[in-house]
Length: 429
Image (cartoon, rainbow, N blue to C red; front, top):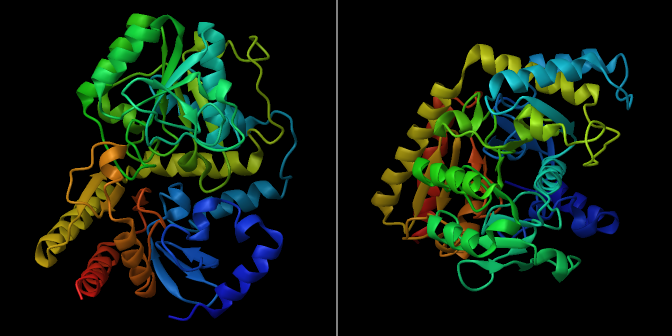
């Protein structure tokens, strides 16, 4: 494959866009090489500006669960755009979209739409602090909840250490209100609550981690988190920006049978357009303005384009129920990769939950961020670049989830496995 046009565009982009991109992972710095510029997508495939074709497992980082350019979603956007793109005023579509979310997710009685997952998690944290009148929050090492100041912190030493800034620009005073704990370690949670329990407003967690690669905790872990937060009067926030409407129509909550106090959504509920939401029990949500004292606003929140696209996608998902098929295709891919790992004696592990999957280049079972970081990122970079040359587009980071869509066929998966085998042979040379 040749990437001449993408290279030209990247050089031009660097003159006007910071790093040539509008989100850091797109720059390919962790995998080497230069990013490809995408021209179009259809179904399970994308094409770059050099007309190279790829089977796509990024899917705009998850929202395209029905594949690229789904005709019904595209038609819904076209139809509503004839009447305007944004009003900054209420529309009937917002009500219909809210009804769909409330109908699908048992723990949600009221919802507030925003324009991104980051907005959703930031707002959920603010709501939890306002509702409980407490300051501290707990998050987990390796879980990404957007780039809000309270959430961009890394773990210090020990299992219950107060957070330190993960990036310049975040005051230490603010970061110190965030307690960062290892994922999948309930003893660390108990220790933190014993020490800071009366000051902890909430625990926020990805119910299935996707931002350290795919890592799933047990149902028991979630159940104990639910019990501990109730005991201390802290709110439990499930960040379902990635898992909501992807792992099941009712999200990870449907799989694990847990009801958090607040849930954040994004990705899938926009049908590929920018959207997010947070929701929960009426008593909690009515602390948000204009009913309550916790302020949050957004001019483009609930805009008709995003509502039309998201509502159509949710309608299709409810009617079609693609989740058993997605899980079946995910298992075929997982089993196929595991067979190739054994055949070529590659030090690697596959983690999968439903249509989310990650190949970690490590010989350790990946159960948290520490074990994820044992991966050979240089080897992953070589694997990524080879797969790109072979026509398979994977997330350009070892620590990101790959996704399947309803548009991926079993033939796509078999073709992918053949190319993974070719890449493994290349790695073993």
